[in-house]
Amino acid sequence: MAQQESDGYYEVLWPRSPRQQKVRALATRPDTLNGKTVAQVWDYLFKGDEIFEFLEEGLKKRFPDVKFVSWREFGSSAGKDERKIVASLPQRFKELGVDAVISGMGC
Image 1: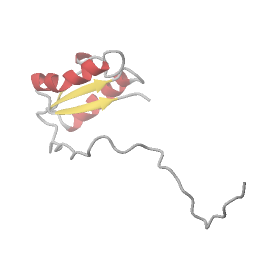
Image 2: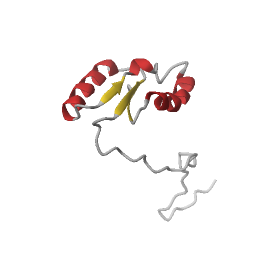
Image 3: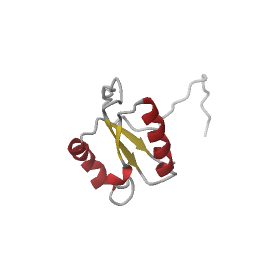
Image 4: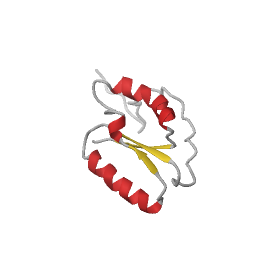
């Protein structure tokens, strides 16, 4: 079988599939966390319990009137109940008056 000569250009394939979802605009950030309620969502991996404690402490110093809804309120955002828990979050946030979310996940 004879080899074809190349002019330095080769046919290639893109290894990723076409984008499945459209890019959405980011939500508007609150101008302050004072008087706001912040939910903590965690997948129960890699020390989130410790990290959220540090975040609360630091944020309360900067924003004394911030309130937190603990990650314990929501259950793990990963695992066997992941779909159910994640699907329930918007309604739970509404019920709890959540203004912002810190979502932590382990790697």
